[in-house]
Image (cartoon, rainbow, N blue to C red; front, side):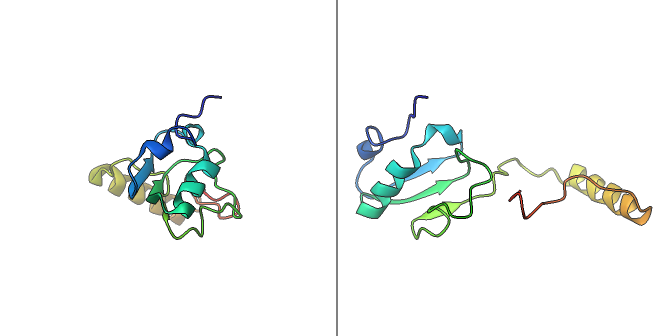
Length: 109
């Protein structure tokens, strides 16, 4: 696998730079990014995708002071569609039917 953002490419960001990955988790070398964050070369990183999803609970990015993790939901919310979906789910719950899209905390998404 060819990692595009790694120890060879990331140092080309200017000192104090900021890394953002919303593409694919496989594009980023986690250890390489964390080393540059720890060294102070990079000011921070926002990460929306990861090699392993959901991101394991013991992954160092979770508690790192220079990382911001987003929930991989960068799609725009359409108001009318969202309202229709909520109304449909409330109706299903009132009828005792199962609903889709429930977050499973054990799985992490």
